[in-house]
Length: 329
Image (cartoon, rainbow, N blue to C red; front, side, top):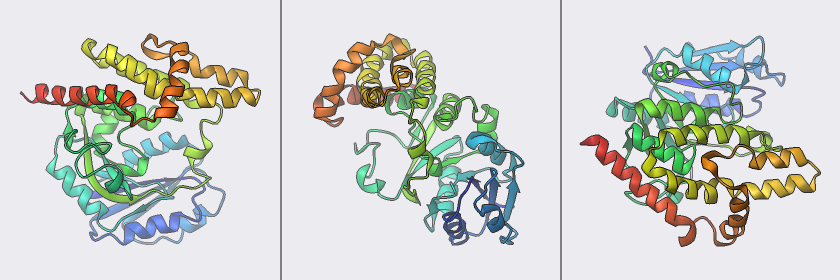
């Protein structure tokens, strides 16, 4: 039986999927299974899947497009191993990615979800901490600290190809909610973290490809993401604890809401008034749209690493550690 499942959702994955599959075949460990689910490709991906004859590889061709998160739910259900590594079809694993992922999860049996580093992040993130702050964030955060971590930094698991998980626990938490087509991973990981916490494998295990056809470039051109992000923040607000709320409101205003000002004006210039106004609808935590717009020039000019922008981040980071310590005693 495979010790780890590689879950590969794909839609029109040519030409990159060949490299993705080859990176799995080149792993230093052979005790894996690769499960590929095609979501209705029309570019030759299905023909390529027909050429794969390794007994460790299983392929599925969906009759209709399930959406990225419906496809991921399907893959989670097919996984036979207790641990899974997600790999998008345009990315690649580094040679020890699967053995390092497996060993980490075995060493942390309470961990349901984990984010690894992509190529380049060992430099940008520092050796020990999240966001280049050595020692600030433990390797494994228990639920209360994990919730505040997601509330402070957003989707801390990161790109889907950086995710490692226990499929059974993700499915037990409800899997991915397809009502969040633009932010389903963020929303799903938050729900899992509320039950099981979140972990960080601080090794570069995956190469994440940046190209014009990937979802991060194609989505949210008309503010589609905003409403979903607001609902996630509202949920985090309900879970964060009263003592953290004043600080979170200030932090979100500066780091989450104020940056929307740029897209707001871009859409206004294009004459997309309704899409532009989505930036300020149903803001969480009773945040003032006017206050966020006023904060934007400060955020833009000083940068998120300035002392003005970092004060709330540093206080929340300290609070995350306090919650971790409290839950451990």
